[in-house]
Length: 128
View 1 (cartoon, rainbow, N blue to C red):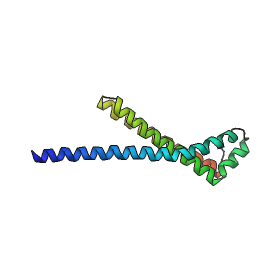
View 2: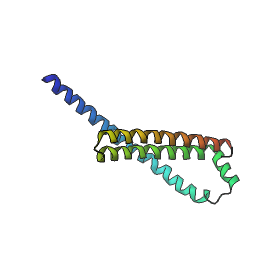
View 3: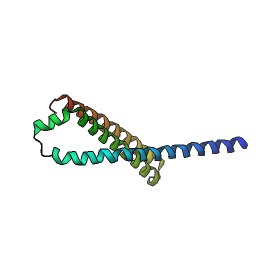
View 4: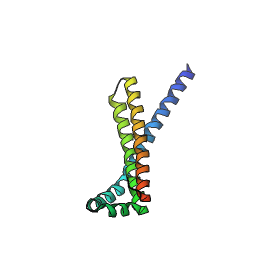
C-alpha cells in the first residue's frame, strides 16, 4: 500500500515539474520575442520597399539573418508551447490528442528546418 502511495506522489511531482518547466519555457520564449519582435517591426517597414537586390544584400548581412532566424525559430517554439497547452486542455479524446500533438510536432520541425534552410540560402546570396 505504501509503495503505491509513494509511486503516485512521485508521478504527481513529475507532472508538476513538467508543467512548471513548460510554463518557464513559455515565459522565457516570450521574453526573447519582445526585443526581436520590436526589431522585426522596425526592420520590416523599410524592408518591404527594398528592391530585389537590396533585399538579397540585407540577407547577406550576418546579423540580419541571425536575428531573423532567432525571431522565427523562437516564434515557432512559442507557438508549439501554446498550442500544446490548448490541445491538452480542450481535446479530451486521448487518441485525438496524441494524433494532433504528433502531427503538430512534425509541422513545427518542418517549419524550423525550412526556415533555417531558406535563410541560409539567402545569406549565401543564392536566388530562391
